[in-house]
Image (spheres, rainbow, N blue to C red):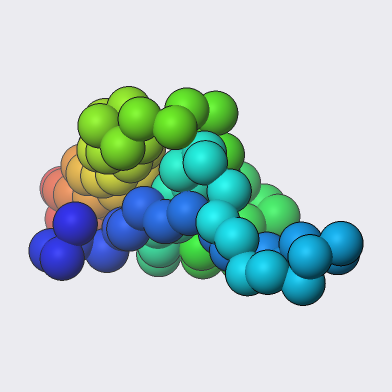
Length: 89
Ligand SMILES: [Zn+2]
């Protein structure tokens, strides 16, 4: 996932007993929505647990989420266009 505004990753942590650095097996996704998701509490960046250790599942979830915020953005553009058309008439 080099392209786009999202990425998937496995958070790492330090084992409290062995002090070894480890990675969790589940994949997380992280993406910037540029506040197009419409959620008032949105910081512009979303992180979500894919709940899967399968990288492909996480990639699919990320693509879906990016599609959702993309759809939200294009809907907003459309309504803005409609408003400005009404305003001109
Ligand atoms: Zn958002």
